[in-house]
Amino acid sequence: MPEADVNDAKQFHEDVPQRSQVFFLKGSAAYDWGMQNRLARIFRPESGRTVMLAIDHGYFQGPTTGLERIDLNILPLVPYADALMLTRGVLRSVVPPTIQQGFVLRASGGPSILKELSNEQIALDVDDAVRLGAAAMAVQVFVGGEFETQSIHNMTRLVDEGYRRGIPVLGVTAVGMELVRDARYLGLATRICAELGAQVVKTYLCDEGFERVVAGCPVPIVMAGGKKLPEVDALIMARRAIDAGASGVDMGRNIFQSPAPVAMLQAVRRVVHDGVSPTEAYDLYRALASEFSHQPATV
Ligand code: R5P
Image 1 (tube, rainbow, N blue to C red):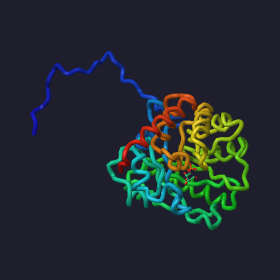
Image 2: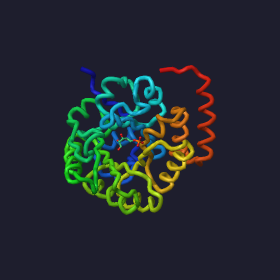
Image 3: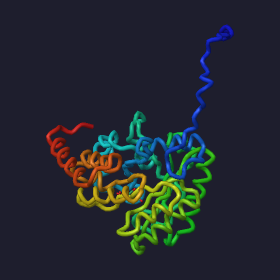
Image 4: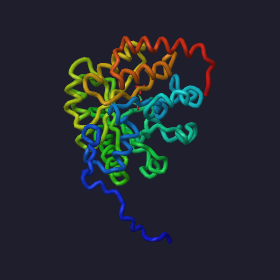
């Protein structure tokens, strides 16, 4: 047993009030410590933003182009992302537990690309998300879809479970072929996700009015990537989303289907975190793409 500590020279700095830190993320000030800590594993406190790499496509469409071998094609990209979005199957089977990035676990699923996609159910027990150390759980919400209510119920169940364990939920606004991606629809879908408890919402950029979508959503919005575009167009898209107030991007195919994914990821980072223009970022992409093409592949 150590002796009593009776030193009179202790320093309490009585004249320095203890400061209360304001949590940096939109709408997130009232969450418990664990939930805020998890959000800070996704969003960088310095910029308040994230560059998330989405590689969860296999959960409904199998071996997507670019994701055939996640061990070979995706692991080299991981150090350049702030966070990953993936399934627990890929996490356990392929991703080393030494990664420093936060990760968002796919938590809904069921139908394959061959069936009605909105007919999802909860596909992850929150205890497994805790066991794996997830920073958040992702659930698809099909506003206007055939199984709209069921998908929203999936989200609200996960939000309840998440609050019990301190794990936030990323509501993903899924847009079916028949739905128009305009500000009115995206504003509706994102607001519903936030009102019903999602701590972060992922949605697509729209041609006009995305600022209103972001302003009308009380929690952070991350921009979904969508189908592969020319690199410069994907960088323009990211710039527009950030300028409209998005708290980051969650991009998949526009990164891993690029001929130079590491270069593309770094160019996106410059747009999201450093405020560079799409032209400047594209110049960086081309310079890095040429540099990487002269290096032997490493895994
Ligand atoms: C989106 O809703 C799914 O989670 C996808 O699997 C993925 O996140 C989409 O990424 P991207 O459209 O950028 O390829």
